[in-house]
Length: 187
Image 1: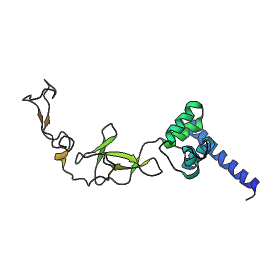
Image 2 (image 1 turned 180 degrees about the horizontal axis):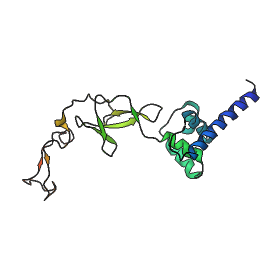
Image 3 (image 1 turned 180 degrees about the vertical axis):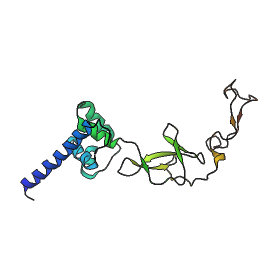
Image 4 (image 1 turned 30 degrees about the vertical axis):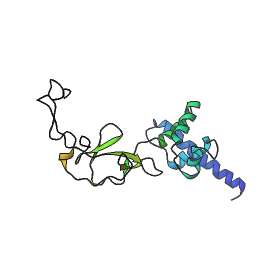
């Protein structure tokens, strides 16, 4: 490819990326741009080979400081729609999990998820370069155990009771019972 042909090729890639970002913005930002477009945008904004944006643009590597670098660029350029599209691509929640070891998870509103069948709690973390792909791990980062399916291990089931008078706050209340069998209460 001649240098002029190469420049035309790069210009075409830029035009495609610009068009996708404009479409993303016009569609109320309700989807995520493609990885190739995100990498092109990162290439427009990187500050040199040492930067997280450069690592992402050149190799697709999402370093731990990438979000901070994008947010700093947005702070300095609040009207940059392409940076907003890049942030939406990188900072999206995990939506697919490769394996859950037989657990049936429900998110309890914090960083961890609890199994509906056994009560075990695991953290859902991104896995690999795709930020929407994740895996469940223990709080120490280890692989989870297989689900026992023993509902008796669920927190608060079946023996957790609080009376209306003290709401469980009075130790020794004859109406309350805190003999929960879960791992959380018995560790």
